[in-house]
Length: 360
Image (cartoon, rainbow, N blue to C red):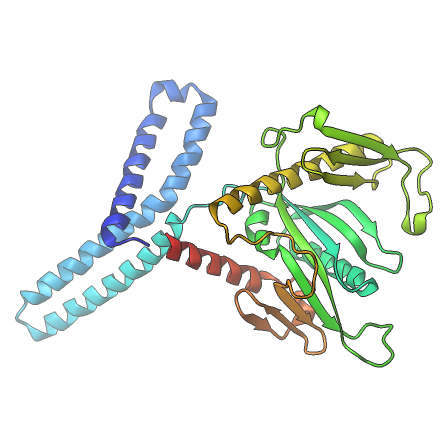
């Protein structure tokens, strides 16, 4: 964060904008325009989140300065001690409010309020990887339940021996993306498979990709860029599960992105779901492209599922989960797999905020 001069100047600028918006909201022209009033109301609320603690910060700063000044001019020892205590309490309040304001000044991700498409793909490890993908899917579904988010399986490709080759879960909730976006990456599991007679620990992986759901106005998909194919739905092992050509495969020719959907019996519903997934993938593709231009050191969100590309390790024999990015380890893997993820999402958010402040 920049020095006090820049910090105070930014806050004063935000306060001035807050007062301007307040005046604009009360003007006759805006009062008769519901859309404009709603837009200004959202901006006013966002600015107020910063301005109110800023006013507290200014008051506490003046209180600390006043107490120090009075203590310097006071001859009574008991009163001097009292005033110094008052100054120390005010300074502690100033420090807390400054820390809060520094976080509020970190630019917000415009996608934080969006719904989420969470993809789970089996990586290295064959049957075990598919089973592990299924368990991760259940972990995130339970986490969503704990937070009162709504979920819907958009598409799934079950493995013949259990679990999933790939599954896409839609998560709808006010802060879903802001809490889940740092779950993207390779999740490694270490355990003894049920088929392993010698008791040897195996390592396998699954890849998580978290994408904000994109609206049609945010991603333009031209009809001529789409190759649409329809076919008969297939179940595990290749058996037909539908007598009509209801399954859909959409290829976005310019990017090469392919989305297949067969979960619904209606071709129209499968096409609608496939387009939603395609929009989200294209939106994320563009976000990553922009990020790569901003920083050559950017790491792609989705790894190849290789064992070395890991963000977390889930060790069953030790009942342990380690997040390698924030060096956080917990020996309660059983409860975490039931959806108790808040400690990890909070640690990752705090780490991201700290790094943003250091870069500012």
